[in-house]
Image 1 (cartoon, each protein chain N blue to C red):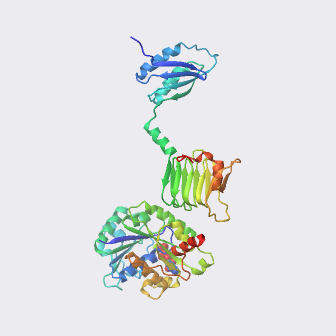
Image 2: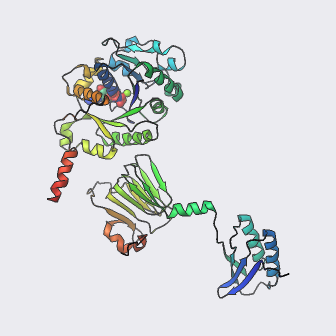
Image 3: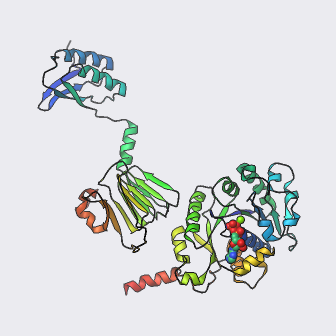
Length: 225
Length: 267
Ligand SMILES: Nc1ncnc2c1ncn2[C@@H]1O[C@H](COP(=O)(O)OP(=O)(O)O)[C@@H](O)[C@H]1O
Ligand SMILES: [Mg+2]
């Protein structure tokens, strides 16, 4: 009888790759992993080796990940760099989808209201004074921004805020904050954008400036333009 | 089956009570059977504006608590045959004396016998507001052309959007043409641009309104004042007539002028 290998160890130029079988039970997997690793020497001063673990079509729970880590880290020179899988949990997939999506919202965000989305926001309507829009990604407003907008709220400093009419009370991108001047200066009428410049200041610029400053904004290029 | 309309604003002193009294009276003048409900418990004054203060025996809280029958608490306006009634607020309780469920029940009972139930809402966004809105089918938001009043109206509209009622209509009250001209007051366009809801009436700031309130005779009963015409027109719009907006001294920059500007820019 040919015994199929449940753990395949491969040496690569970046370190060690552990390919774990995804059809056997987890306890079998642990057993074989322990055996395979026992061949590794275990002295404090060997050169450290990075380990990448791939679990095929198996999803590991947090606890299972910890068990694998424990076995591998028993050998002092081995360091787990990543544990990867071909598959992800549905909830993670949902979240990733949300994060990469453009959320189209057609309403007026009124005083006291907060509209928050995971990805980019395309708002068709105004943000009134006292209203607030928050996005993990970019914010595009087809309307007047008279309240507060916070783009890249989880720290994305590349995020931008665009509005047909830029008269905000406050602009925030990642951790940067800009407040409107106390003196009501010119009322802006043209479409404009806001981004963090090289001095880590939020500045308001013509919409056209975005093309050179954030070339990665383009999402798709169908039609071969 | 009648229709319940709540008159609300967020900010106090912008004309909710004045508007409730006058819209209710104007609808009664049109032959409708109307009941005004004062939900400003603890600060009632709809009765004063209507001149019905002395006739109050029971109030809204008595009805809610089952201490009297709904019919017993209704105060009839003697200026009409059988058109206009008031369900007064209690003066000596606070706004938590009535629950939303009780309000719903009272309003739906009133809807059996009245064509219109006009609910005067207290200022603020707390329990009193929630109670006033609970039984309503429609809402009218009152604001003055002041930044703070408009801000509060915006907040209220946001809260109303979450309720199972039709999109609210807007009254802009106490417009002072000379101040608008000088740019010291928001104009109608500026207010409607921010609030983005349908305008159902504009009312000039008019000393006659204050005089009328003080004498317990709503201004609509005086057919000659501008404010009276404005309130009568609002009543007609509520009844489904399409009445063009009354011109205050300077005509509001309406849709037509906007269109003209647009075409003008192209030529
Ligand atoms: N169009 C108007 N012109 C002049 N005074 C007005 C007008 N509307 C209301 N007022 C006055 O403003 C004050 C507040 O009005 P009220 O209706 O009691 O407001 P609210 O019910 O919103 O607190 C009252 O003294 C009233 O007479
Ligand atoms: Mg009042």
